[in-house]
Amino acid sequence: MSKWIWVYSFCALVLLGIWFIPLTIPSSTISEVEQTKILPLDDQIAAISLPKPRDNSELVHELAQTIRQELGESIQHVEIQVGLEDFRQHLRDKYQDDTDSLFHSVIQVAFPTYAEQIFANLSRMQKYEHWLLTEMKSLLTMTFEQKQIAIWAKRRELFASDADILWSAELAEREQRMADTRKSIELLNHAYDMEINQRLFALKATIETNFSEQVGGQILSPAMLASTFFSLDSVQRDLGKMSPYERSEQLNSIRRDLGFSERQIEKAALKDEKNELRWQIGYQYMRERQALLDTLSGDELDHELKRLRMNYFDDEASTLEKEEQQGFYRFKRPRVYGRN
Image (cartoon, rainbow, N blue to C red; front, top):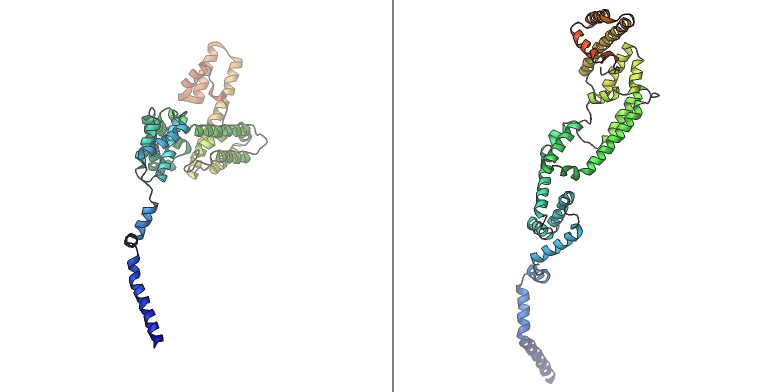
C-alpha cells in the first residue's frame, strides 16, 4: 500500500511543477518573445540591414571632390566636358533615383566656372546623337562623300570650330587613309609593268581597304572611280596603244567592272565615239595648220588659217581663233581616253 501512495505523490509533484513553471519566467522576457512573434519576418530583416539614409549634400561633395581631382586641370577642354556623359551614366547605374539632379549638383560644386558650358555641350551632343538616329535611313542611301558633307555640316552647326576638336581623331584617321590611298594611286600611276585589269583590281582593293569601315552607301560613285582610274598615266599608255575597237571594248569592260549599268555603259560608249571623231579631226587640223605656218606668213597666213578653221570647225571657228590668239591650243592638250 505504501508503494502506491509514494507513486501518486511523485506524479502530483510533477504536475504541480509544470503548472507553476510559467509563473517563474520574468515578464520582460515574455514581452520580447511576444514582440518577436508579432513582427513579420521582412520587417525584422529590414530593421537589421537597412542603413541610415545618407545626407545628399555629403554625397555631392564627395563626388565633386573626386571628379575635380581627376579632371580639374583639363575641364576647360570641350572634349573633356563632353566626356562627362560617361560620368553621368555611371551615376545613373549606381544611384537610381533622380541621378540627373545629382549629376547637375556635382558638376556645379566641382566646376562652378564651367558648369553652364558643360551642360550646354552635353545638350548639343545629345541633339547630335538624336539627329544621327533620326537621319540614319537617309544617311545609309548616300555615297561616302555625301554622308561626310551632311554629318560635318551638322557637327559644325552644333559645335562650330569645336567640331574639329571633338572629332580630331576621326579627321586624323581619315587623313591617314586618304594619304595611303594617294600613295597607292601614285604607285599605280607608274605601274607600267602591270596589266590594265590588274591595276583596276588594285585600285578597287585600295579603296575598299582604306574605307572598309564606312557602312552604308558607296564610298565613291562608279563615275568617280572611273575618272580616277582613267587619270593614271600607266592606264592611258596602255589605252593609247590599242586600236579604236580594242580601246572601246576595254573601256566598256572597265566601266562594267566598276559598277556602271548597261545603259550607262552604252551612253558612255557613244560619248567615246564622238570624242574619238573630234580628236581625229583636231589632229588633222593641227597637221594642216603646222604646214601653213611652215610655208606662209603675214596676212596670207592669217587668211589661210581663218579658212582652215572654218573648214574644220564651222561655228566654233571664231572660238578656236580666240583660244589660239591667247596661246591655248585645245588639241595639244593630253588626250585622256575615257574622259575627253
